[in-house]
Image 1: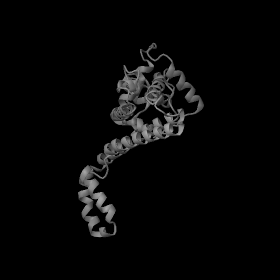
Image 2 (image 1 turned 30 degrees about the vertical axis):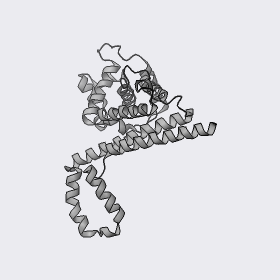
Image 3 (image 1 turned 90 degrees about the vertical axis):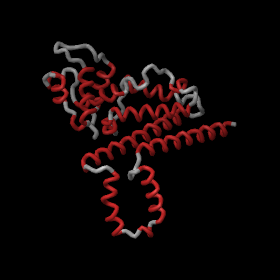
Image 4 (image 1 turned 30 degrees about the horizontal axis):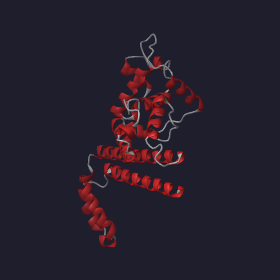
Amino acid sequence: MTTNQSGNDYARSLSLLWGPQTVPGRSGLTVEKIVLAGMEIADENGIEQLSMRKVAERLGAGAMSLYTYVPSKSELLDLMLDKSQADLYEGCTDIREACGGDWREAMRSIAKTNWALFQRHPWIVDLSGRRPVLGPHVVLKYELELCALDGIGLSDIEMDSTLSLLLMHVESCARLQFSMLRTETSSGQDDNEWWLALSPVLDNITDWSRFPVSSRVGNAAGEMHQSAYSPEYAYLFGLERIIAGTAALIKQNWSGTK
């Protein structure tokens, strides 16, 4: 799910993102209270169930009173995205230093932190495709995560690309995980139950000897994961490959300068 943003919407969002959010109006409402209520609804019921009316109901206020603080749902989503990252690295000013100066451990820490973010707020993955939310918390997150890769042998473009690759990998695995959970909920079957029901039908209509490699590998993966896929395993496996690739790039860069 994405919500389109016009230039005017984004200008309003920036003003709200960088402006005071805790100053109450005559009603006692604040931008922060509205944002936190929106996040609670999205955490509990998903982003599709979020509306300005439901936020107002949760706050015990009239829907129209919210628009004095947050003009529309588009701005609310921007504020929620930024707020979700407010305490992501609380108390940490240097991720790599906190990991003993090891950039590999810093990358693992960044991945773990973002994976946990998606577990707390699954609705974030539904907002992919929106323009970047350049609020104070998002910008600080970007700064801290980039600094973990600074001075290790990557160019500025390579630093940005490596971080983007890492974050997109984590997000894609989290998205698959949530999609599988939704399928389980809507179907009433987990992956194992689904396969037990489907397997006899497939065996009756499929000659598996025609697909020896996929049959062997599929059986091995299914036995290991007890599921068609394991998003968490894919996340951890891919993370180590990204780290290995980054190490190879750094080595290549150093070799090229000697």
